[in-house]
Image (cartoon, rainbow, N blue to C red; front, side):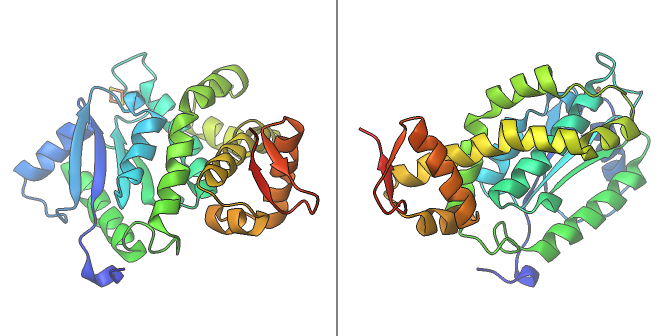
Length: 256
Ligand code: FES
């Protein structure tokens, strides 16, 4: 694995056409310098950045993902597409952390079309951050294939996560502070674990079992979870008849 100083990061940048892309353009025209790590994908609004885009970018071994939108209140659609981007980035960070990817690899910023210098400053800072974190999987200390499996499981769950977000995670105050307060709330965290993270863990356990792993310890090591947590999920899965556990309660196989 390359040392952090030896590699040139790949950062996938989803930029809103109306503001951040304009800021990046102005940055280039003005010849402000920033490292050439960014691969730009231009979208009409930061709210278009689906959770799936983020997980897929990392699954394809992007070292960082950047989302750039209009300042809050300036979104051209809805007019609150960038609040959706804010909520998505908070949900994505939590899921990335859960599957073992350092959430600092994802960054969301608001940049107007007149803020070329700000765009350069952010890219310099984020580029340095990702370079310090190293190649995807480096700071995580995890096997890249295992991280990709976790991201694939998260991607499969995106339609379900969107449904849960719509039905159970409505942010009452459409302000930046309102979002931060909501996502820090204890009741939200309990519900998020119950409705999303536990289901994701079970899905990942099923994936590990399909790959032939059979003991709680093996599965826990592959997924980066505590053995006790894996055992708890295996027990629930066996109650649902999805897996079989032998008499010693340490081995499991996919039910016929
Ligand atoms: Fe730029 Fe929505 S149009 S964030």
